[in-house]
Image (tube, rainbow, N blue to C red; front, side, top):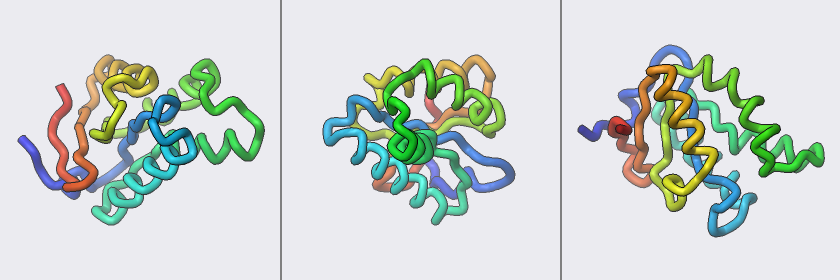
Length: 128
């Protein structure tokens, strides 16, 4: 059942999963895409944390390998623990993304809600 993204507004924040390292237009564009989706959700009053939008800028500014999962996944763990649930952006590559798979599995294990977001329509549906 698809519904408006604004239905996710409320207390706390959601964790936004987007593909990164294998994004066809490159990691700079992947970070921009993630920030744009986070901004669109903000317009719908949905608080989100985008690890890609945040971590890409940090990696570029500090010389940390932006694609090293051994660094970034443990750093994202506290954000996953604190989030209300997961929003996966339905964009090219999300099904093939190692990081998105790890995030989905983590939220599944924590029994937190998971949604698939159609960014163009700003509609969400439960992610099986």
